[in-house]
Amino acid sequence: MKRITLGALDYGLAFGVDRALRDLAEHGRLSAVGALVTTELWPREFRPLQEIAEKVGKQVLFGITLAFSGDRVTPVSTRMQDIYGERMLTREQINRRAFFRLLPDELLFEESLAQLARYSVLMQRPPDFVAVRDGLLARTSLARIVFKAIDRADFETPPLVISPVRSGFKTLRLARVAKSYNLQVLPKGNPLPQTSDVEELQDLLLNHFDGMSDRSFVAAIPGKSDDRLMRNEPRKKIAIRECQYEVLRSTRFFQTLDRKDVFLN
Image 1 (cartoon, rainbow, N blue to C red):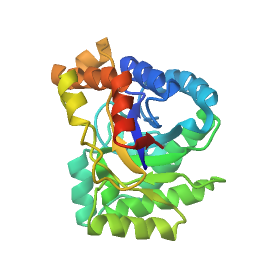
Image 2: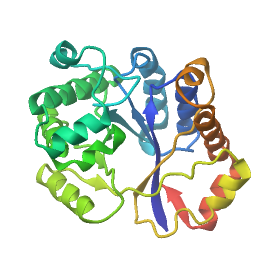
Image 3: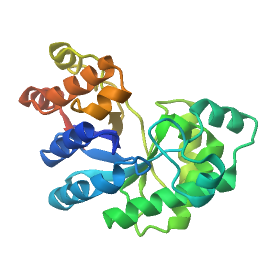
C-alpha cells in the first residue's frame, strides 16, 4: 500500500478557495493544507482553519507556504516592508539574484521568521510542514535561509519540508541540506492534472499515482469561484479549481484510490 500526501498550498488566497479547502480537509478529502499568511485575507481566515485543525486532529497536516514572491501577497517583516513596500519581488528577480549570489539574506531570513511567527501565533500551533511559493526552495541558497529560520523558530517538533523538485541531483542536495538542520523532506509527486473536465480528470487519476514514491506530496488547487478569484485569475484556472474540487469530494475518487491501493497520508 502506498501513502500519498494530497495537499493544497494556497489557503488564504480567496474566500472560495478557503471554503473549499476547509470542506475537503474536514471530510478527509485532503491530507495537507498550506496557508499563505502574507495575504490580506489571512487575518480573517485563520480562525475557521484553526477550528478545522482542532476538529480533525492529526488526520490532516496543517502548515505554511512561505511567500517571498508573486502577486496578492505582501511582506510581513518590518524591514522587508520598509525596503519593498507592499510588493514582493518576482520569482525571476529572486532566481537571478540567487544565481549571482546577491540574495538579501538577512531580509529573507527576517521575513521567514516573521511569517513563521505569524502562522504559529494566530493558529496557536506550530506548522506541520513548510513549503515555499513558486518552487524557490529549489535554490540551495534560499533553502539554507529558510532552514535556518525554521531552526531559529525552535519548534518542539521540526516541520516537514515540501520538496519543489521531483527527482535528480537537486532533490538529493535539498534533502542533504535539510538533514543538516534535522529536517525531513517529503518528495514531490506530479500535481493533479489540470483539466476542467470532470470525467477526464477521473480517468486520468486512474494511473496518476503510479510510480510515485511513498509519502509523495501531490499538489492540488481545488476551489470555488468568487468575486476575488474572478478579478485575479483567468476563467480557465478557476474552471480547473472547480473541477478538482468536484472530483476530490466525490465517492468515485476514493474508489480509485482503493483500486490502486493508495491511501492519503
